[in-house]
Image (tube, rainbow, N blue to C red):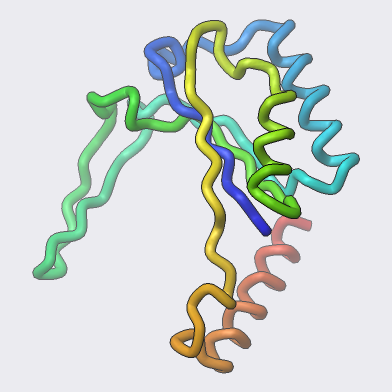
Length: 143
């Protein structure tokens, strides 16, 4: 199963405060463990929301662009991993070994990623073929 591990933002991360050398080394070592174990598929830190935008989709199809920063820090993320694990319990065990991503109290969320099987018959063979093509192309682009 694939899971997304979502690192929630803090006031410091939203202010653009970068991790110190010690934390960067600890996180690098942890990422290396994840890769060696075949768990980590991807992962990145994100710039503060002040450098981002949101696009609001109205029911009538209109799109509105909203510039950051965004007010509710507790609702924002500052980084993520995409992991391949056998179970949610395995993901939890890996996360228990993770260094604290901030130098303060914080939360990290784990959420399962939908797989093709989760959509049942609504996910047609044509859609499966399209999904396979898209995954192959994105893998090629990542090189």
